[in-house]
Amino acid sequence: MKNFGLGLFLGAAAGVALSLIKDEHGVRLGQPLKENIAGMQDAGESLADGIAKAKKASQELSANLPAAERAVSDISDDVKHYQNHIAPNLKEINYRSKKIQREVESTDQEQKNS
Image (cartoon, rainbow, N blue to C red; front, side, top):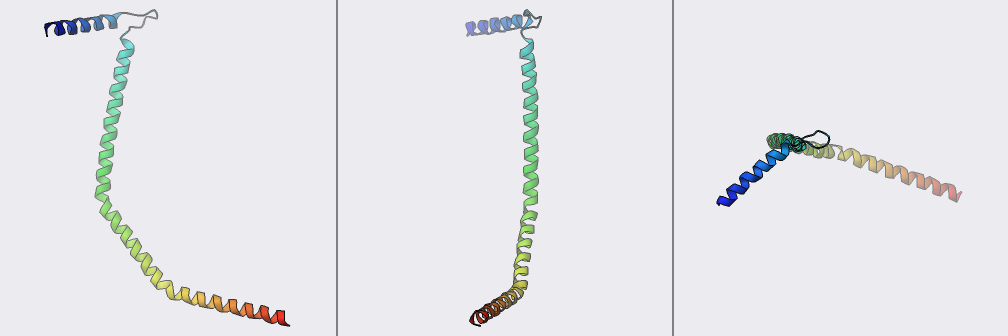
């Protein structure tokens, strides 16, 4: 355990020393790492914000779901009522269209025979 602590200390010291050294362009070696860490922090915050928004949307959906189900049920009932209401009219239209079709066929048949 003593060697582990010593290795940990020496590794940390070496990391700090390397982060202070500059490359040929004058940029510190630790600078890109610092930018990457900042970028990861921003990404983590964005992810946390996105998760919070998703939870809020899920809660709102759960709260509004009964009203939506009720609205769909009401619409379904209205459609059934409308279908029942227009059924006699549709039967009458169908009857008259068949009657007209029979008359047309009868007229065509008479014209062919004459």
